[in-house]
Length: 239
Image 1: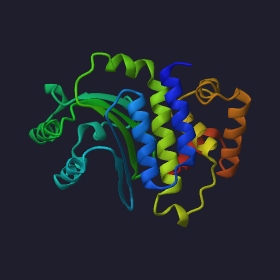
Image 2 (image 1 turned 60 degrees about the horizontal axis):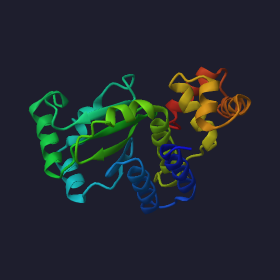
Image 3 (image 1 turned 45 degrees about the horizontal axis):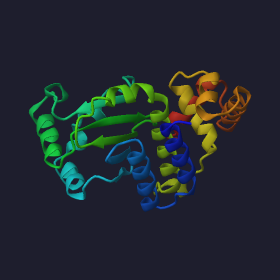
Image 4 (image 1 turned 90 degrees about the vertical axis):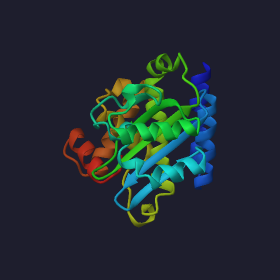
């Protein structure tokens, strides 16, 4: 088992025991450091508001929202069907498409936040979630790391989002979530076009186990087909 796999497995173990926002902050900060990053940030936008959990300096996150950067951040605003993981560099002239975007990156650089990668997470209508890992200097190996660990990084984002929304979403107690954690994970990967064999390898399950979870999800959602189940889960904000 390599260091990346070990960091991911430890992340999953700690994630299952996290309850409070502080717990989730510590879990994400630990996996960020294990993977060689200095900061992390989880951003979730739902109809009732925005949820941010991060290890960024508080002065930066306060400034980010005061300036309305969450509304123009090019990393967050990329089309949903685009590459689910984006590598960005605040000093790259191509990173900004407008003066305000350039000001956002320059402001981030004043807090030494230079580069990183952002994982966009599948979510329902009027919802958006992303998990970012960032460093204060450009690493020449960051693009290679992103490519070699792409599936694992997506799983970090999906698992984190699923646990946060299930445990500390202020509306979670008011709605019935008809899917287990595994069912949501399998449906989320199906929405990305992964096969049962792909999902089995990523979740360390058998293909028969993946089929079991997907069949249960379809029945729990009263869906006629698996694509119908994915559509219903996205519409209800379960992914």
